[in-house]
View 1: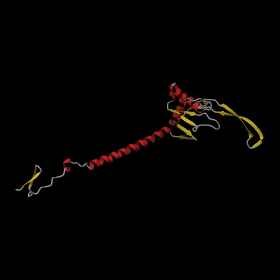
View 2 (view 1 turned 45 degrees about the horizontal axis):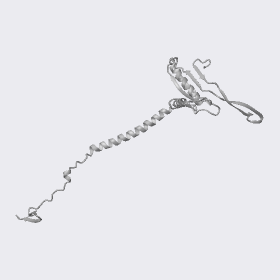
View 3 (view 1 turned 30 degrees about the vertical axis):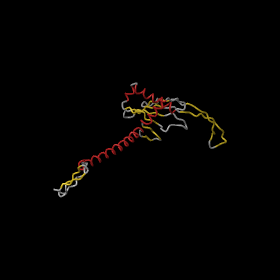
Length: 208
């Protein structure tokens, strides 16, 4: 829970020790002896906070260790404009399922299923992430814009090519070719030439 702050509700898995190490009691003094220390994994957290406007931010914090943590420090799971919607079972149940999947994926001792992996992958591309204290745009939006950019480039190129072809088809009409015009014209025969007739392989000339 959020302690005395009634605007905050926090649900988290507890810290889990996973290894014991031996280290110098004083890193600056090697003769100060050694000590044993437990390495602890902090569990994931589901965090609700009501703002001054009445909307509620639902945040996911990953499980992490001293040396191992996801690239994101927070996932903005949801923004509920009407806090009364949290009284309905459907929305908190949905948040809880994402929370348990996120815990399994980010925890050292988690046992994520393929469905858990798919859910967390979807969260990381469809939600705003906080990385190094800065919000990152949704990857799904960036991918969609890239796809639209390529589609528009291809579509506009095709439309431009079609427009050019259509324009020239109107301004330069195709030449109509008549097959008859391809036939050779007969050689004109002079009027003073005698008429020649071939009869039984004999040439008979008629002089007029």
